[in-house]
Image (cartoon, rainbow, N blue to C red; front, side, top):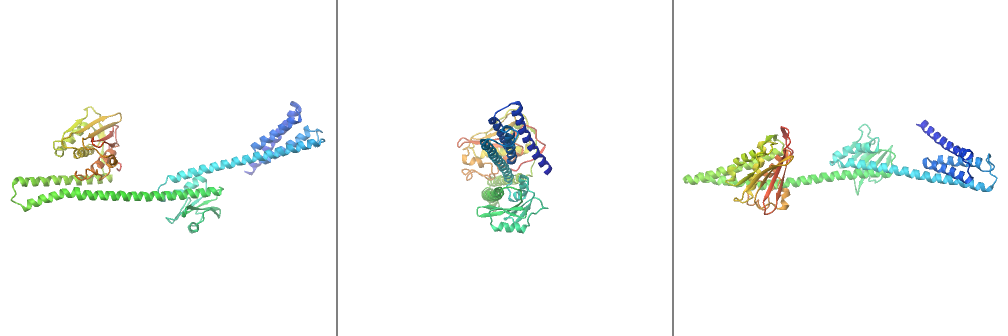
Length: 491
């Protein structure tokens, strides 16, 4: 390395020397010129040298050019003496100008180098911050931060102590930098500036009045501001990850509370209602053995109907639990949608009770890969939902169409529609409209089940509704062939 540096220095000095003697040869034998022109040419050489290299080369060029100017162009020519005192002034001014310009040019060169260094440091800080932002879990962030710092800044080793976890993380387990005890002591001291210690930098992670921990790095030759910036980025990232975790826990707690309240409401209302009817009918049958046959048949029908209703409610709960647990397998095979609609309507005749259902689907629609049983459930839930929330005399329209990539099925009703404020939540489990829950039976799981099944097929479902103008539920399935067996994504 030292040999290479010496060769580079000698090479630059040789270039300056050759250029200076080249000017002498040019103005002596090729292109004779006056003293002013020669001086300006030498000054230009000094300026070029100063702009390309450091001050020492420019000073050498200034001294060399002054000597050559005196020897070859100032009388008496051929001697390093000056007869005219005015030439002393000119020579001194030339030498001082060259040195001054060389100094200024070198300063600008150094400023440019510093600016470039700062730019590289900012790029590394940006890269480091991007790596930190990728982590949203505090423990994962703490584990990856030392390695990310090593990759971004080229440190030999990095150690991170996190106060909340009371744990130390190292980029290299074989190089601990400082013992865990010393890192804890540094974190408890409350200093806000980086401290140099035993060939490494100890950077407190300060965030307002709180210190999440401390970071130790091998000294990488960076400015103190860079070490403080690294500490600030790590502190902010740790606080952000902790805030996200607290927010996630709070949101999960709120969702759990909402689902618990909805489940309790469903159990107390929708499950107890059929149980009460069954108990009342059974009590009447037992306590009144002399009831007429017509009344006994009516009570038996009540028991049967309410038992079936209770079975459906429990079946929906079990189905939703299976979908949430990803325990349902999809056997997707090409199926015709019109045949699926007609079969579903035949199965639903007892529930529809003569309700008019218009089917608008062409016979030549392409087949789509689907699980016939599961997609039958989707249609059943949507048609049952339309029957519940629309007048008994109004028709339900089930239509099917396709575009270039998808098969679309629409179930439309003429009901009161859904408020805009509630449309976002209609596919959530246990959600029921505020205006309908009091006088329409249900658990609020049908639409959630439908969405989970459709999304498991790689499709989607959406709602179009305006208050007073009915609702349309449109689900779509991809026409491309699907794998024979898929696990559905969790809804």
